[in-house]
Length: 193
Image (cartoon, rainbow, N blue to C red; front, side):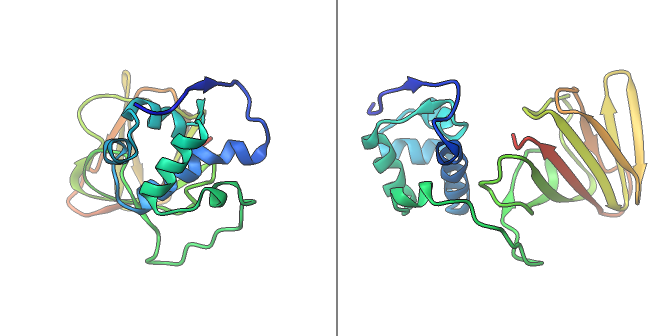
C-alpha cells in the first residue's frame, strides 16, 4: 500500500497538530468508514487510523489520495482554526458505540482540546455490557433529562436530572438508561479522544 510512515513525537507546528483531526472530521461528515477511505486511497486502515490520531506523518502522495477520496483540498487541512457555531438541530451525528443511543457532536470535529457530545439514550439503551475506557484524561457526564446508571468496577452510580459525575477517562465503565423514559446526557471528554 502507498504511504511512507515517518513517526514524530511532537507536531512541527500548530497546523500539523490539526491535520489528523480535520481528516477524521471530513471522513465522518462524509459518512465514510476508516476502511472505505483507506481502500479508496490505497492505504491500510491501520495507517489511516494512526494518521487521524496524528501519530504518523504521511507522504504528500498519501495526503493527496486521502483528501481526494474525501473531496477536500489539501490546503484546507492547514487553514487556521476557525470558531465553531453548532445550531440546534444541526449538530453532526457521531457514534461512540452502544445501543439505543443517538449522539451528536456539539464541538467542532477539529477541536482537539475537548469533545462535547449530547446523547439521547432510549429506555434500556446504553454503552454495552462490557466495561471500557476512553483515550482521554477526563470524562464528565451531566444528566440533562431522565436517569442514567454508571457501572464502574465495584460501584454503581445512579444519576438523576441535574446530576453530574467526573472521572478519569481511563476508568473502566459502562452506562445505561434504567428507566422507561428517554434520558438526555451531556458528555465532555478532554482531550478529545
